[in-house]
Length: 265
Image 1 (cartoon, helix red, strand yellow):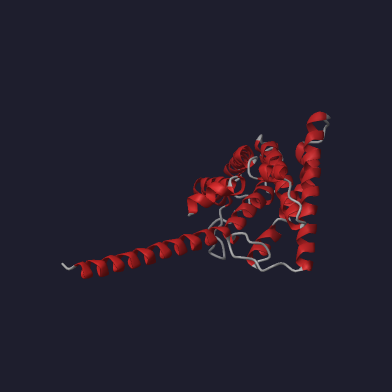
Image 2 (image 1 turned 135 degrees about the vertical axis):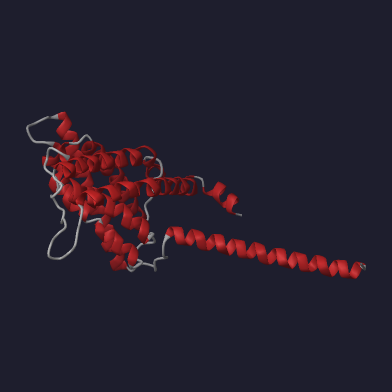
């Protein structure tokens, strides 16, 4: 084979290699974009004001809940922990449903699916478990204080982090807390949630007709509260590790950006 032909083949090989590398880079870029969620447009002044107010309000709300938890254990009274925290938890946890809308309309660059699961699981604990069962079950479960403590600390840090980001004041300690405390708090919170679910399962087993619609009936339709509880609990098995590892990836990205950039390139 002549030297000229060899040179041509070498050039063609280099071109093909270049195209493959470029395609791989684009694929990786698209993958990261999908994980992060849709890109939000540059928020208007009104949007910033709304988001700042929302995040500051949530910060104050969860701070009040944490204060009530601390007071409950420092100054015990006849009132239960749920008695003291019920109203603010219902208000501020259910208000988080707005975050699904924020992600869906592109007001914030969050993944809609991940946001929906995170919000749904907690709303389900509050509305579909604690409020749906007598006090002697989920509200009296050891899972309640675990969940509330983990939620309140996590949300105070998370919402204040978002607020600080909007007003362009971001101390490094806040970034560190945002991407470090989850290592302990996330498993504690999930453990508390699952214990509350387990208490609700016990209630449903003892009261199979509660919140259920059993056949035969005129609508020829069935709904099992017990099966819903079990289905949600099983959903934690694949989803929790995924979200937990995703947070570790975000931690590396935020706390060691230079190493992440080198790895990508």
